[in-house]
Amino acid sequence: SRNLAAFARRAAEDDAVLYDVAKTLISPLNADMGGGFLLAFSDKAPLFNRACLLALKALGVEKDYTSTHLNSVFALQGLENNAKADLPCGIEAVKTGVGIVLRKQEQISVAKPQPKKFGLDGFDGGRYEVIVSVEPIDCPNLWGEVLRADLDILAGAEFRFRQDGDEIRRFGGGTKILKKFFNEEKVPAKEREYIPLIAKGSEVLIVCGVEIAGQVKVTESTKNTVYIYLKKIS
Image 1 (tube, helix red, strand yellow):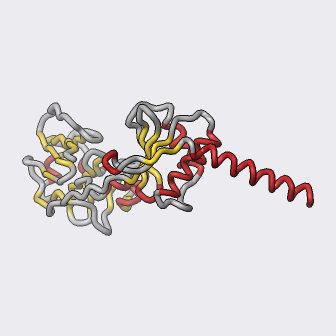
Image 2: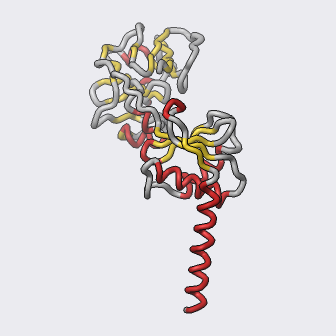
Image 3: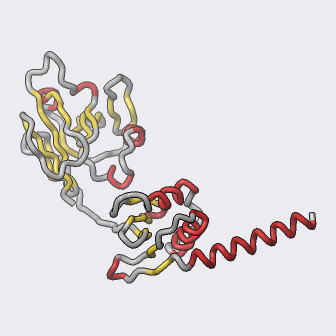
């Protein structure tokens, strides 16, 4: 047990030394640069990860991180500039030319308009605009997928945002709660509130930019096809 205690003491001393060296990788950023901290590049994961933990603690993240979060920040070093990783408590890591920046994500509050009857004039959803066309068009700033649907089945639907109780009938059969659908489709949680839907009651027919429900798919009996585009505004 004496040997074990001595080993634990040496391990703690080693850890303290590593943290002292890790501090040299961290530089605070001025508010006019968006605040947060800059982590200098390092191929030594034990040092870089400790620097990341120190920066997270300074930003108020004490417990919610995992090794996966740390690995994702370390991996940013090998990606292109402006590549990002989402971390707990609204923190993001961004690759820059001089290091990895850790900072609180900008909380952009975008007003969400009221529901509107579905039509070919589309829908201005605040953060996203839905463009509806009866033929393919070239759409700049497209977010997600171009979707095709049966126009006649969409009659009487409305543009709106997600609500409690929303469900969608999947292509392969079976109905899903919209939250589970978003999880399966890996739609970022921070975007879900702003992605426009086309729905009838609690039945979601189209998640714009993501997927259509089975009942509006184009078939041999479809007389009128419509194309749904999602354009990012802000």
